[in-house]
Length: 488
Length: 94
Image 1 (cartoon, chains in turn orange, yellow):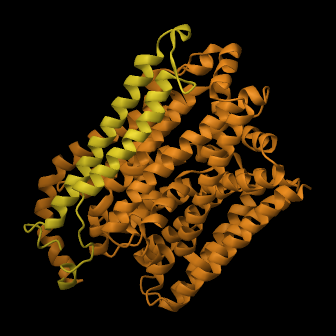
Image 2: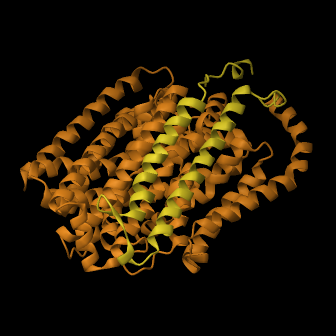
Image 3: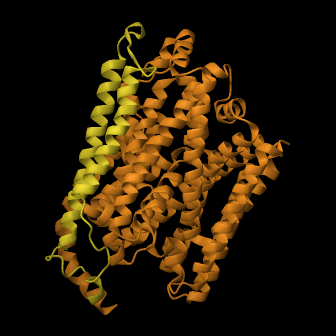
């Protein structure tokens, strides 16, 4: 084992543990357990908010998968990745103050809570909760596999041991510290990601003999590497542009991202987070994907894209520095997994259990249950990740797109359109998810675009048409609904 | 809060305007990104010009584009975004 590489990783894990213990003090003393455990008592400052947004969003994809594809495709893939810069400001500007104000009025702790109060519909709650649990659980398991593989390749441990270490590290701080631990560790992980990107980018450029030199080498191998069209000129403008929907604006609808937009302290935190978030996302996305492209002339002939990042770090950096830099992808994976874990747990406790199973549970019971559900969930994911079932892998493919197609209009229209109602929301959720899975399975890339685009368009029109059609009906009903709610 | 639906929370006007600004920024961002990438990048590779070693299309679309968006975001937030109290004074009366 290479101790020079491993020592920084161990130090990193120890720091993360300490944050978990620190945050658990808040959990134990807070007067409102649910608010604290699942939302950090809405106390996030601007820096932590920006970092937790970026870190939650920047997963194995941006640090391992993305640079790997950039290595095979060239600058065209960096261009595609830059569509993600928009998330840095767009999410917080669109959800922004309206979401924060409304969720405080409704006293919502989860995104489903918000939808519940906004649409007053049991079915909206059930469909949302079920799709969150199914999709994010699969996404989480897939990320665990990624985390364990990375740890395996860095340390030389076998897969099961690596997975075990990874699982225990994440579980401990999430279970005891809740959302606050997740957010603050995300901030540390975000900083590690930024530093890792910077160090590796500089070292790679130097190793490649400067940017002009690298570009010349790339052109000599295949001129397509430096065009916007990819190695075999197959990246069309329509396809690349459609990623603005999938990884750009659509991110608004991911529950693990949206919930952060109700967790910040005040307007000032929001403003600061928008600026920091834009800078950090822009830098990490540009830097990491460029590293993938630049790695090609330095280390030609890597067959497995996922190995590009670890191999280039070990090639161009001294071992101890490579250890620090390689905590960045580990940080990226951990910070995504921890957010998904706490979110799925909050969906089960707050949206399912407290809504439908035992609404009057005592606060002591809620506390015990939240902590144990989080721990049990983590253990199930661990078992699944040991030998991931095909169904889970399949579901994971649809996780992000499916949630975007399901939630984008119920959230955005719920915030900004008075006439948005439960019938519109239900139709658009069901149509969004089902058309997305159908398109992706039977007709991928309709009109040359990513298969998430059309379902989002379809669910938009479905939402608007159904809401308008049922507007009158709902108005007539609303009088007796009010009477009922007064009685209740 | 359902009963006061006629009296719109004044903070919502600010929030709506800021959401529209966000939408505007994303459109500007997309147009910039798209026009430089495919406007300059569609030429044959032999005719590419280079800035700091990068092909010009990439330099303008991805690097300058990101810097410009950052500056725009800073300007917009500093000068147009309004600080409001997010708390819920009205909701308490429910």
